[in-house]
Length: 447
Ligand code: ATP
Ligand code: MG
Image (cartoon, rainbow, N blue to C red; front, side, top):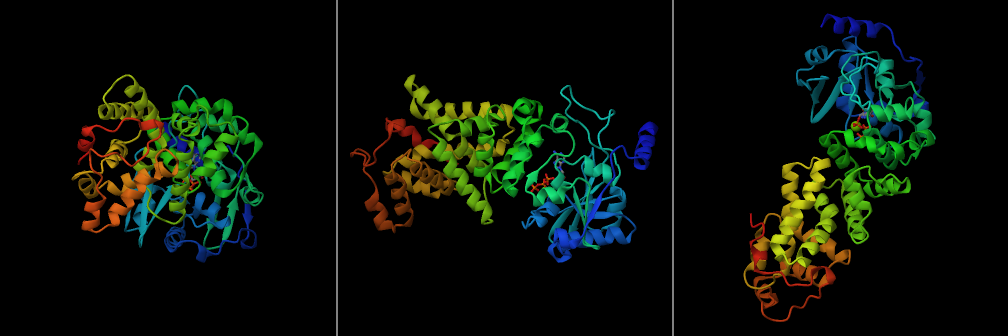
């Protein structure tokens, strides 16, 4: 305990990293204090009035300089979490290993972190060099050095309207280059997720990857295997819901990074049949994110993995398994494979299965079945999924069109639209689903 404390105090005094920083004036960075959210401004002011350093840091500064509205604001300070907590009535300390403080200002939540120290020989790492703990307070220069990319190590002071730049991040941003702080190989070993972050941020900001940052990715991609699944899942969600998923995947493919980086990416990028379907789905997700509409992970993952399910289902049917039970088996097997590497939460897995299980039920257009389907809470997601299948050429559009009409029709017309069970089916199937679905279809996912 005492050793730790001494080390902490000691570290505060001497900095093993260069503390040379540039102060960038307003004329060069262009961020007026009014551009910053009022909550972030007030939080910095309160901390500064109490004698502490306080800056808006990271993605928000980067985005503001690039002319993008920040999603949220992080604040970095030399005040300890307890000191921060005592200055804001509406605040709470979160996290056990490295505490940060959530400060509530109006409807905003600001994440306030105390400057962290750079890693050194004492830092706990796994056998591959991945940093396990990152929880020692440090100087501002150290805090800058432990961030990933130069454009992410910018500190904006809303009072003085200056940006403190330790690693030439402003110049890199203006030159549209994503550059790693420090030696890229070492930084990927510390945290392999930085490879995915590099791709995502370069797509979001339209930055070129600096060759030194890009070169080691292909050979180091296997390090991703040691990253805890829950963390990978979070990063995948960030990538897929960045509003730039299509561009991210294009960059991954162009860089030859899609092999082995993540099993899900292999699935997404290497399925010839499903590619159109997946790309349509990602493009519509991008459009929804950009328009500020809600997006559901369950729906997106259902689309990303659908052709895996179809292929697995076909195999089972070819082996003589009964259609609907075979579909359920296929769904479970595909999800199990993904879950091993990607911690798809149980809730999301449930959403995914609901959407898949609804698909055969759209084939039933006789009797009470279509009315029951219409009443299900998941109908809308299932229907959107059906439309996407039609748009990708997997199904004839006629079925999706029928369901669109049926939803909008009055009761009389609905009755007239019903397709008699025994009669010849109007829809034309493509080779994927040759057999009509059996009666079990109507008991699928009725909850
Ligand atoms: P966005 O919020 O647009 O997704 P971001 O860069 O703000 O991007 P966050 O995950 O919010 O990403 O991280 C905030 C900041 O924390 C980053 O700008 C960076 O300075 C630092 N950071 C995040 N992840 C890492 C990492 N893996 N290694 C080093 N620094 C990191
Ligand atoms: Mg952020």
